[in-house]
Length: 320
Figure 1 (cartoon, helix red, strand yellow):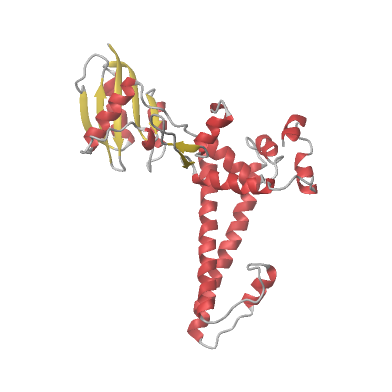
Figure 2: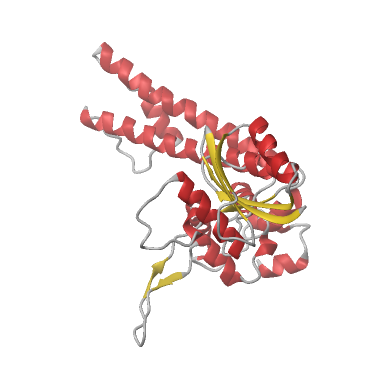
């Protein structure tokens, strides 16, 4: 039986284009397209296993998520997911097809030029999706609030105080009445959307706190909350977006992962540094930036932060 085979896959919703290479030849050993379902995938893997001892596979991370990765792992296939932005590309490549993409992935996998992304556990992924859903709801709420206020502005109705969406502002909105029936219905529709989304956001925040106070997140969340600017939501975002902090050997490598390091475009004696690279998760950058605003001034030892630090390791409290 032969030893190793390298499988590059171009994955789509309905189909998977596959190209296979070995160490001994530059020619494509196998190239075909299969349907994207477990029956066809298992059939293809079993056929490879009958001829090869080790199967190494890869595909680009994308909208299809991690089910294929996890299924291949369950079948005993070595698989890595690759970030599309980190795949080496040549400027001379002017033709793009599924077949060419699969072959290129197989060649790069064989040469060891591909770096795997971190695949979260199913539990972390589920919580991360919930957090992202909450973030989307927050954005939708902001948009609906803007629509409501612009509608009122078009009708010449303005709020005299400076702060919106307070108790007094909501009381003012509840008391608004229009002479025109259709305008009243329009206002009610806009405002009801806002109120429903506000209640949904509160419910999601409560659920996130419950998750944060349960295993396996409770201890790590408690440590992160020792830092000013970090509460349940920020802590859970960090834990579920990063997953494993141990994969970053230095603070610099973590900053690079977040896209918070400067870019550079230097050649010869000329050195040019640009703004931050902005690679990685925009959500994490935004959340950490918002948390950093709490450090504009020296800490005052507030009762809230002191309560969070109660019972936490002395070393963590000292660092915070």
